[in-house]
Image (tube, rainbow, N blue to C red; front, top):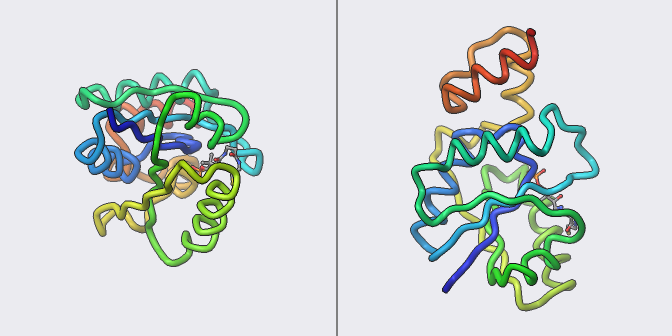
Length: 159
Ligand code: PNS
């Protein structure tokens, strides 16, 4: 069984994330989408809300499951016997942070390989942060997230 972990904040999941899930799910037997604590980011949604949103958004993928973890990514990858970490690479601006994280994770555990996948061009400028900002300011995010996430975002920000 070839299992990969796709970690992230997913606050909330976007069409860009789902594009990466689709690509990864064709390469591995199982993809574990894992919500991690990013200490540098304060979340809009709780962990439980993110899990619920991701579970709904990935329902159509038979080999994808959703979890969350605390602590180091490499430790969790080892615990669930994942041999690869999937990360989406959108633009050069992502590269420095991703490069640092991949090499640090390799230093911490050399048996977990980081694999970068590129989303569709139309998602290269997309991020959860920008989607939240647009939604907060009353803009339309329908093209960037699944419909039910757009509704959830609107409810959360404008209730
Ligand atoms: O979606 P994000 O916020 O870019 O994801 C970053 C994330 C959550 C993957 C990263 O912060 C992470 O791996 N956190 C877990 C803690 C950890 O292992 N930190 C050391 C990374 S070198």
